[in-house]
Length: 265
Image (cartoon, rainbow, N blue to C red; front, side, top):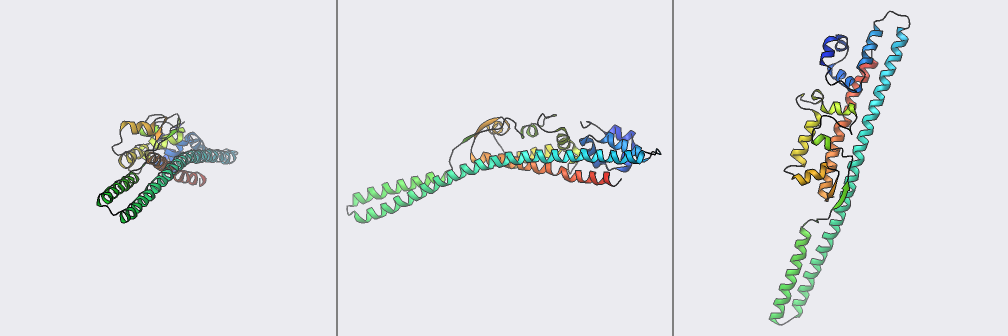
């Protein structure tokens, strides 16, 4: 498990800070390998005959742990990708149903308009022409108006393991996210500005660009366990999942830096 605060440890043990950057040490803490790094440094300065063999074994143990962390990151990112793809597929289905509905209404409106024109050209009585023209125009305009409005078709979509909830409500702990990933998302020093965590910045992007002025009902829909989604709601959900997936995949870049630092020692 990552330590909640490693500042005091790094102040008392400067052997780590002399060899590794702060960023690498934060990630090492997230991966739970700080004790292993300290043991590796001790072996590097040891004069014992078997120290070199133990050092190679310890470094391999660290790299194996980091490989497991990389697998964990990829697995969780794949789960986010799967959730986003599922939401997008259902949204596409609803969009196609809406497109077919609009196409039928548009064709029907054009046909009625054409029929009205033909009938008025065949009828010679003024009153009849007016009735047919007005009636046909009203029906055609009504169908065109219906086509202009999007469908309110909904589908029930359940997500009892909601991957968005802990991020939105900024929970201190998570029962869904692996401890390593959750630590990185909530440690401010992993973000670009070092002022707000990746988790907080992600929530702000959702709030400003995806859920701008969303009602409480909409928030409950996205961050609850189930609800009736329209196509736009599903697209929004997929966008949030994809944004979160990108943030988690970026942890692998930091991991590569740590693997390189360990391998070169």
